[in-house]
Length: 267
Length: 246
Image (cartoon, rainbow over all chains, first blue to last red):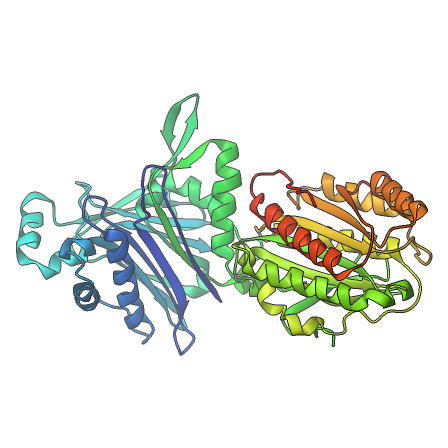
């Protein structure tokens, strides 16, 4: 089993507000974390990192964290640095394996991609219908949470699509009223990747016209690891952007963060 | 003392030949792009009188490269040659190249297997470059062959060297490569002409004659080598080669 994480700046951003981590617990379980800081809140590049590190502290103990404990820990660290409370406005995706399962929680929006042993790719894309994901940091401020509830539908929508067994011809849409959680069977998988919504902001530019690319199309190209060792995801991501996207006129308009847990022996 | 090959290194044979080289395992590399630096240093009998200076030159190159802003993206392989080739160490990051490990590296004696050393050095760049490129690393390279004499011992010839250099240029694994033939102590015009012709015929990017083997000249050579390495490393990603003047 291998893990790696990678993030990069999107074309339209000045600072990368996405962040990703991946690693192993003391017991050898794998974890992955992706955070995507809100562009309209201040210093969320820092906040996203604090949130990811706070989540990592829980995951390293072999525990899938809930939103409150992550955001409170991050807020304590942020307060020491005088980070504005809104600086913690960031989505958070976490994954943790055990002997049989990989459990994923999605706080906000983002993408979960599971590469299956039959070669298929199952893509779970989570988004908020109004484009206003419920950031865990809202839990620190009852007024902000109430304001979000007043003007936004309190749901996260999951779009399921992909290839291989268990995937129909049409995408499936599921509304979640609580924090979405996936449980994936490891014996069916070769990899699980968490991604920020930057995956949903890749465009193909042809003759000056930008056409959005389906997430599954991007992931099919991105998630092939010829040598799944060391910084396999960082190398793949850089080559994908520097060579393949440049060659094909693809551009990442938003920041992008990915974290992968890989079982190459199962491939 | 040679730098011992550790558990992090893998050995790879070069084609059907008896030559091989070692390189750091892909999984142990932290960066996503590398400039491969290959140095082949002549330690034949004629170098004996300035072996200390050659050793000092190598140490100075390593020291200077470790100060480079691209230090984390450099991997160095050092070979010495006389009758036979000796891999002092295979491709490894500069952090694993302590200066002290180059003490007494120039143990001089014997003849000059210049073509064998040059050809296999270039081939090792090609083979390891492919290994890295296949694993999504971006790679370019720079090689230095430092000699004070003509070949009188190799199993390869100048054509094999030319073929190896052309092979690298054709391959897509190594984005670009700079190759420099350095003639040290080439006061003899015949030797100078021989090396000049070799550089042209084999297709080296640059031939650098140094008239003597004084410490000051070799110190300048060390500066040139380290600056060339930095320049080529900076060029990685551009698709171009970068050479500098002596």
